[in-house]
Length: 268
Ligand SMILES: [Ca+2]
Image 1: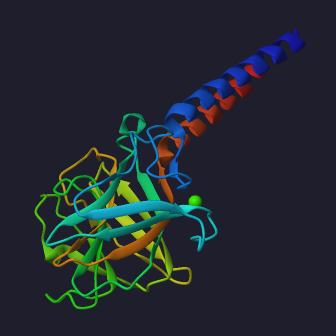
Image 2 (image 1 turned 90 degrees about the horizontal axis):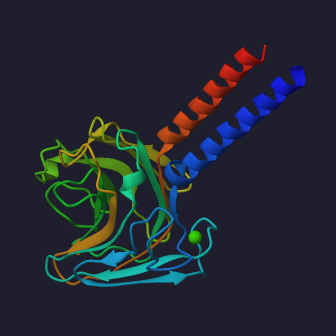
């Protein structure tokens, strides 16, 4: 009799583990691009390949001068003309995302040639007006009271209108050749975000910032781009792009731990 109960317990544990594994396969995994291929294809959590917007943009997989020893990476060049905004964009499969949970996006990035005076670079998620996070930086002489060669966080008011006054200095300078690790946390439930930038030695962390757009469900589209008032070349490298949604994993752990408590109570 005792042996039979133990067997039942083992079966229940096995069933719980199967449920956990199934959930892990469809909902709990991080979406990662290690740039072993470019522009990539749909699958592994991505809705499609990398796409290029306006401007002359090229991207290719490179392997020498790795970023943080993470193997092959994306080497990108953009040459926007006039006031064009040039972007490389990729969208993760948002259908499986817990839309009320916190989404953590991280990537390694390097500027491969100093920014020219009136070039602006930008990282963001979403469309222009319905962006969640926005990080920007200008070349050395931008004017308007904005700092040159420094990353800035956009503290949006969730009303979609662009306002330079919403830019807050990060305190992190851009130096060509340095590898930076960005970590961005999106909280769609409060339409807020935070970010950390690490340059291999020092890190800066933002306070709580607002989304630009009034969006409680993010689009899942990541944009890495540049804008120039004249034709300027912008060269960068990127690797280790990860989109992580931790809440479902926590729910899984909760379920499995709850299951064990249930089993322990019934095994006695
Ligand atoms: Ca890589």
